[in-house]
Length: 511
Image 1: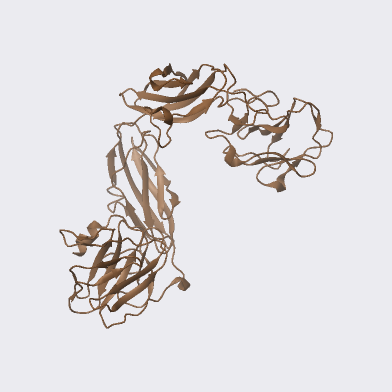
Image 2: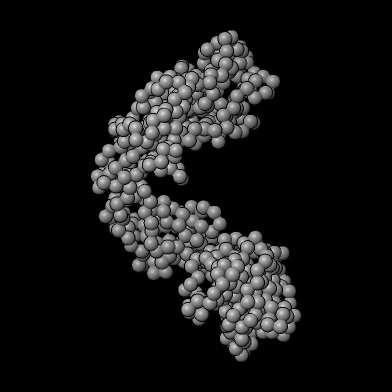
C-alpha cells in the first residue's frame, strides 16, 4: 500500500529555508488513548493528503472514523493502519475508495491553513491540529512519528518523517515540451531545509558542453530556457542542486554519468520584436509594421492581413512582408480616412509547412475578427507644452531630448532632470533657452555631464521646473512594449510615446 500511494503522489515541492523555533506549533493532545495520530499534512500538493500513523504494535481498524477540514467531513468507509505503519488519505475533492484501495476525501486542504480533526466512530476526538499556511508543496508533520512537536518538513507520504539535513530534493519532468520557437524551457522544483545555494543545468548538443545557473521563478521553482537548437540534434542534460551545507543531488539520479537524452523536434516559426510605426496615424498615412521571425528549418513566407472600416473577415487583404535583413520582415498598411478602424494580424510559414500567428496574446484567433489587434486613424493629440520628447537608453551617450510645443521661448535655467534617483538630478544652467517649437538635449553619460545613465530596459524620467514641480514624466511602466531603449513622441509633442527605430537627437522625430 505504501508504494502504491507514493506512486500516485505526483509532485512534491518544498521549502528553501528552515522554520524558526517560534513558528513551531504544539498540537492539541488526543482526547482518548487511541494510538492513531494525524502525522503529516500537505495542502499544496498534487494532490493534498492527510497521513495517519499507528503508534501501536497492533493493526487498528479505522472504518467509520471521520476526518474534517474545517468545512467538510469525510467518513472513512473502510480501512486500517498497520502496526507502526502509515495510511495516506488523498484530499483531492473526490469521495471514493479506488480499485487499489486508495482513499480519496471529498475535500481539499486550504494552503492558507485550517483546522484538521480526526474523530472515531463514537464521536470522540482522536486528534486535531491547526494547520498553518504552507508554501507550495511543503508538508507540516510531526518531527518524530506520533511525537508531540510539529514542524515544516519535506513531504514523506507513507514514510518516516524527518527534518534532518539531507541533500536537496529535485522534482522535474523527464519529458520536455517544445514551445513555438524550437526552444525547450526546463523547470524543476528544488527543496532543501537548510536552504538552496544554487541550481545548475548542464547540457550538451553538437559536441558542445555548457552549464548555466537556473533562475528562481518563485517558490521553490527554478527554470531556464535553452537556446534555439536545430531540429534533429540530440540534446543531453541533467540538473545539479547544492544546499547551503554543500550537499548535492542530481536529476536524474543517474547523472552525471547517465544524463537524460532527447532529439530536438522541428518547432513552429516564432515572432518577436514587434514594431508598429504609429497607432494613431493621420488621415491617409501609411502604417509600417516590422517584426522578427525565426524558424530553425527556414522561413517560407510572412504575411500581414488587414481589414479596414466595415469590411468583414472575408474582405481581408493580404500583404506579403519583405525580408529587410536578418530575421526582420516589413509590411505597410495603406493610409485610410480619418476615424477608420484597421484590424490586422500576421502569419508565418516555415519550409516544412508549419504555420504560426501573431499576436501571441491569449484569446487571439485569426479566424475571429473581434480578436484581432487594431488601431484607429485619427490626428494625434499634440501637447502644446514643454515635454520630454525623445529618450535614448542604449546610445553613446544616452540622452534626453526636450521639445517646446508652445509659441514662446522658455528659459530652462533651474529646471531639473533625473532618472529613478532624484538625488542624482541634473540642474540646467541659467540662461539656457529652448525656442518655441525647438529642441534641447541633455547627454546622460553617468559622469562628465550627469550622474546618471538611462537603462535600456526603461526607467522613470522626470522633468521638474525651478520650483520643483513636475513638468513632465515618463514612468518605467509606460515605456512602449517591445522597445529596445529608444522611444519618442511621434510627431513631436504627441500625447503617446512610440518606439523609434532611428535617433533624431535635437531634431524632429520620425519613424
